[in-house]
Amino acid sequence: MIYTAIDTFYLTDEQLKNSPSRKDDIDEATEITLRIYGCDLIQESGILLRLPQAVMATGQVLFHRFYCKKSFARFNVKRVAASCVWLASKLEESPRKAKNILIAFHRLERRRENLPIEHLDPFSKKYSELKMDLNRTERHLLKEMGFICHVECPHKFISNYLATLETPPELRQEAWNLANDSLRTTLCVRFKSEVVACGVVYAAARRFQVPLPENPPWWKAFDAEKSGIDEVCRVLAHLYGLPKAQYVPVCKDGDSFTPSNKSWDPQAKQVPKEGSLNGPVSNNDTNTPKAASAAATLESGGSKDSLIKLALDKLKESKKTDDDSKNVPTEGEAREEPVPKSKAEHRTEAIGERNKEGERERERERPKARDRDRGRDSDREWEREREIERDREKLKERGYRSRDKGKDSGCFMNFFHWRALLKIKASFISRYVFRSPLLFLGSIIFSCETIKSSTSEAASSLSDHGDYYSSSFASREKDRHRHNPYA
Image (cartoon, helix red, strand yellow):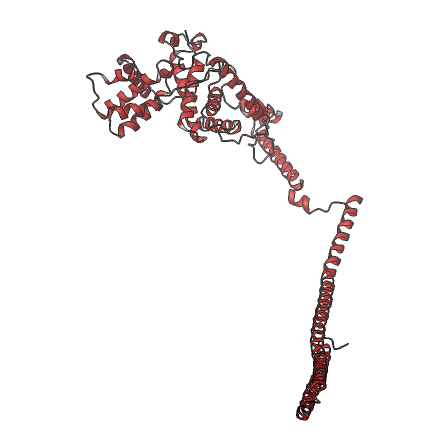
């Protein structure tokens, strides 16, 4: 009975001997060869697709489990191997596209069978049918597994066991290689991963002559039996004694992964013509009556005259064929001969000429348009400069006006100061004029001096004001004629 729980999918030796392939008259040796061949395909395709080793190990275990329930005669090994790789890549979280898997298996089949390598067109009918078959086979896999695809490989136990036994480092690589090779056999469906790991470690230690503890036995610490370890070593030794696995056509649906072009295209064969250069020249002289008569005369020992006539007739026929071949125009001569053009062709040529002329005129007008644009740009720049100059003149005038206002206010301030002084002195005179005449004379002298000083200051300010205006007017006239000579 086959158990399909999460960790149990194991068969006995009797169940393996009575596999579904035996019922379809497939012997044990052929089944072993096909199992090894399918596992080789999975391993090589994983290398081409750059998949991790865990994906390839899971795919090989799924492959063995599937053919424990189904026969090799009903499911093609190559297509099942491709579906196992596709499903295992999803289970191990390293998915690959169906397109890449189909191309990899197509290339492997061509290389293994020494066929010319052809590109698999993803838009062809062949590719679409292969993709549909890949999906269909994956559904068969999941159905037979009961959607329980949990796989425990012996690789994860090997490192722990060797670290516990404190073995040399070179033993680890050898045990890893043996574990990879054990997946080509039915050990994964007969024993648990712990037993296979112990058997691999034991075989590697025997090869490198590394002693392992026996008192107590080391395998009991890892829940293994000596009989299981011996069986693992025996199966591995039998595997290394077999030649390289080759494909054995036993499937009823089809023997190849990608059907040949003949099956897809029944009209692909092209019969070579009699006068073709690439194909072999066919001899149909035996079918002609002349050839038959010549053969009859030769058999009956005919005269020489009849043979000469036949030879002359053959020469004449060969000359005729040569003349006919000369009269047939070659590709180069056919191209050189002028072909009469229709009205539509003439119209298209005329339209093309008009378009060319229009393009030439546009090319001629392009430099003129560039010059116009440049002139416009220069005019705009000149106008901007004039506006900037006007703004500067306005600012200058504002500054001049503010200065003039300040000076005028200074003059007015001098006038008001003089008037205030006169008022003060008048009040001073009205108070003290009748008290002392000396004070009266001193005040008169002081007032005259102040009036002289104030009038001199006002005259100097007016003279400065006039000089300033005259100089500013001259400088402005010069600037205007310098920047705008036509103004």
